[in-house]
Each structure stands twice: as C-alpha cells, then as structure tokens.
Amino acid sequence: MYFFSSATALVIKLFLGFFMFALIIRFLMQLVRADYNNPVSSFIVKVTNPALKPLRRFIPGLFGVDLSSLILVFVVQIIEIVLVNLLPGKQLPDLFSLLMLTVGQVADTVITIYFICIMVVVIASWIVQGSYNPVLNLIYQLINPLMQPIRRLIPPMSGLDLSPLVAIAVLIFAKFLIAAPILFYADPLGSYR
Image 1 (cartoon, rainbow, N blue to C red):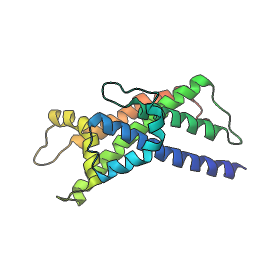
Image 2 (cartoon, helix red, strand yellow; image 1 turned 180 degrees about the vertical axis):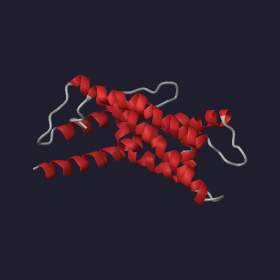
Image 3 (cartoon, rainbow, N blue to C red; image 1 turned 90 degrees about the vertical axis):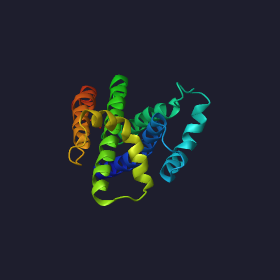
Image 4 (spheres, rainbow, N blue to C red; image 1 turned 45 degrees about the vertical axis):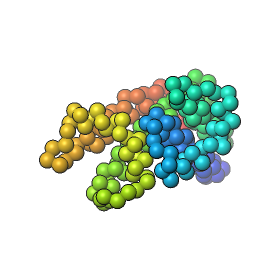
C-alpha cells in the first residue's frame, strides 16, 4: 500500500506541479509584460486559459494585472496538498497549517522558477550564441526585472557578467529565509509534504 501511495503522490505532484509552474509563469509574464507572440508564451496561455477564463468573470484585475492566475496558483497548491494527504497513511493538516504550507510551497516554487531560469541563461550563454531562441527570449524577459538592479550594482567586468552569481545567491538566501521558515513553521516534521 505504501508504494501505491507514493506513486500516486508522485503523479499528483507531477501533474499539478506542472500546471502550477505554468500558472506562475503566466502571472510573471503579465508582470513583466512579456511578448505574447512568442511560441512558448502562446503555449503557456493555451495551457492555462481553460482554467483561467471562468475565473475572470468573478475575479477582477488590479492595476492591469490579472489576479485570477495568482489566485488559481494558490488553489491548485491547496488541492495538491489535500489530495496527497488524502492518500492512505497520511492525514490532512489543520486549516492554518494548510494555508501556511500553501504560501510556503508557492514561495518555494517561485524561487525555484527564477533559479532554473537563471541557470538556463548561464548555461545557454556558453552554448547558444547569437541565434534567436523563443525559450531563452521568454526567460530573459522573466528574469530581467531581477537582474537589472544587480547589473547596475555590479556591472560586467572584462566581459564577465557576475550578476547571475549574485542573483542565485539572493535566491538561495530567499529560499532559506522566506520559504523554508514558513514551511517549517507550518509542518515541523515534514509529514504533510
């Protein structure tokens, strides 16, 4: 029974995690005013639209930002936590722990997305030179608001850009100082994750 529960939890986390990644990227695309003509952006819009369109009727935007994608991120995270903890051998967290786990997991996922994006840009800078890539174009648009202030503080030296290194350090600190304490406070034993 344990192996079935573990496999089922993995499938739930995989599918809902992928959808949550897409929703977070969709929300971030709105914040940075990303190019929606990009094929990757179009794919993310197509994946998330079926769930977002009905919500837009009830959830208004704020300052030009569609809040339905952000709210749906939290709803999907709550559903994931509940479904995983309904499996045999698990128990549901109380409401406060559920909300704290949700906030902590979403914060952790956002930090992870930025970390992955920066690592992709660093690796691509060594491999892909001078050609247009829609994935990299979207990633550059997503990480630019994070990288610009760092590049102003630490400009490239002799053609070497150290800003990704600083950004990764900031993200690691954010993970340990924001996401990890929230998750630990909500679930000290790690039994709900």
